[in-house]
Amino acid sequence: MGNYLFKSTKECRALILGLDAAGKTTILYRMKLGEVVTTIPTIGFNVETIKNKNMSITAWDVGGRDKIRPLYRHYYANTNIVIFVIDSNDRERIEETKEELFRFLREDELRECLVLILANKQDLDNSLSVDEIKKLIGFDEINHTKKAIYGISAINGTGLTEAFDWIAQTYNNKENFLVEPFKETLSDVKYSTWTEYFKNFTKKFF
Image (cartoon, rainbow, N blue to C red; front, top):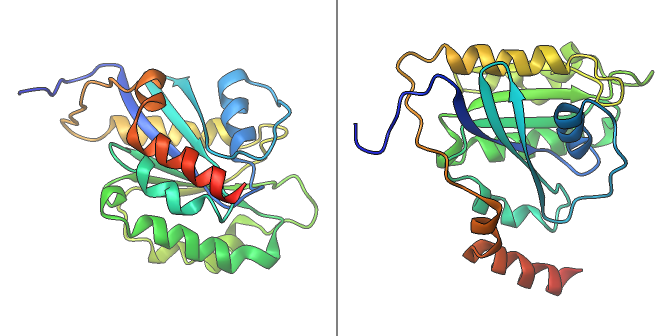
């Protein structure tokens, strides 16, 4: 079996993607801490480990500002799950949201990932419904075999448990699923080539 192991407690890597101000960081820390924390726009990434059922999810929340998006490809390797967050209240950017979603899903390194779409801010009166969002983003056009969309609120937590339970159930139901031992650490990231690239990039644009 080489370097691969059958895992009873599965370790996986998730990318949390989406446009800026969609609520990615709020979702990350709501799932990590069980409460809402004050956040600022992410310039770079936040990474936390989320425990859910028999899973350990290392979740990378990547900043959504347009100037940062060229760096996204540096985060794709070894990703098992794409969590794409949509601001249900941002009607003006729904087409841009669709374009970004499909741009990610066309990447070779993300073609085999589970895809979870979180329609955030469902607690707001003017938010698009999940059915409306499904139509507007072309959910049925997504070719990934394992995909789901949930309406959620990062503020009050509605829908998040169900969404992450879907991850656990779907991931665990993969027959004979093989997982590489997860060795990635923050120290590895600190000294990686793409982080140095990110530093140079931010110096140029910020």
